[in-house]
Length: 361
Image (cartoon, rainbow, N blue to C red; front, side, top):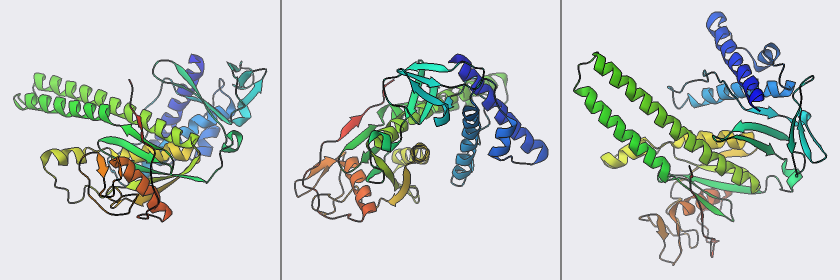
């Protein structure tokens, strides 16, 4: 597994270096097909090597879309010592209870004990403690009908997201993420205050400034890791539930003319809504799910039971008709209802209690 991850990392690094070197010296942005003919690996299956190159171009495509809203976003330039290995359908076989993952002619295949059916896609990656094998099955293979399930997603600052697919509601807790962001603000303020009492450009000033950058980079990596794990859990849960369309509440203009006070303004401006929406969208599209943005005006204020409008206080929505539910769950339900065209209709008598999903270290 180490050898495969190293070979994949070497190929990814060569792809990154070759692409940007060509851009810098020739002014040419190579197409994926040209890069796949140029870069290959003797240790990987031909389609696995193509998948590595395609991963780089997928990151490039995401950057191009993201920079329209965030001009300061950076393209994929970092090289990788280790990288995930992917096997497509042509390199996967199942025989005598073992999954056989081909690594190309002349190389020994990877053999995995397997008690399930043959997957259509397999990925080998590192989860922080060890190697993890991730398999994808077609919806037809597991008996999940396509295009029948729609889920609403309500992004939040206190809770990372709430989802409702018409049957179940899940609340993804954002407490640990918020604690890391608060600690990040605290350290930034402490070090900035120390820098203000030093002579700019002095040796002590340079050392402390470098230390500040190291601390903030480490905390940024922690935030990114939390977001990746939470959004992966969210998308994989929806996919396993047969969801084909993910409707995300559109809150891109929420910061416009914002003035809720100093503390509230800071929280809203540091809300990672764009990055969270981007991660959910990319991972859902990779699994073949469709993404739709829906205006979420009044979705957290409209009662799903009687259709009346009431602005809640706190995290629990209480209506005069007696209906009570988690505020973010109400928002996710109404985002889905708005997409389906029955927003404000009194169609719900009772809703199942939401399921809480907490981030675990």
